[in-house]
Figure (cartoon, rainbow, N blue to C red):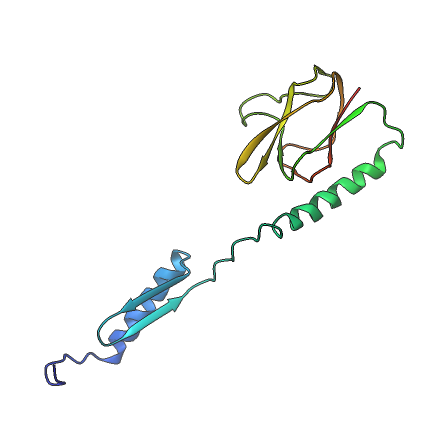
Length: 159
């Protein structure tokens, strides 16, 4: 194909096309769009997508947040706590009920038996039921529904 056979388009048409594509990228939060023809390659990059979290690095911000929240509560709590403490066996998100429309597994004042489910901790998209190792009465719940919890963090106290 020689130059005489090619249709030459004004540069304004190309700029209008690029601006339209940039608008599409922006409005749809796309990371990148690439268009190639025989004559031209156009690449438009939008907002950079965040890199996937590293397996070991992802819990660190949640850990800092959980520690910051837990520290004032620990300072306010009496030095002597009687009873048994249920601690989180994993890092994740604490849920007090099986679903938002269902009642909590346990509330302060409830009597429970060893083996009863007391909460769910979501970790890596898995819902893990947490069972009590103790029988007794729920004296205190240290975390709120939806809070991040760390491995070994106090969840509740059973008397």
